Image (cartoon, rainbow, N blue to C red; front, top):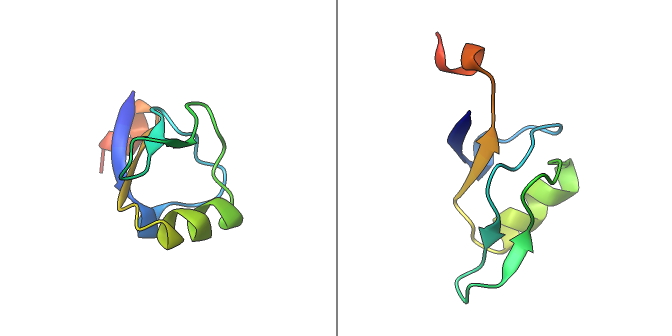
Length: 62
């Protein structure tokens, strides 16, 4: 399953479900990449607002 998550809500260990691109269409993060603190800071510096992450069914229940 996939879920779009705001960059400010990302946590280390999450896995990217869809390539992340910058405003020019350049891939800055590949599908399957594991989010780290460094990754979150880079995404913020590139003004990327959201990332599609892989998640379990439990993530949708709350």
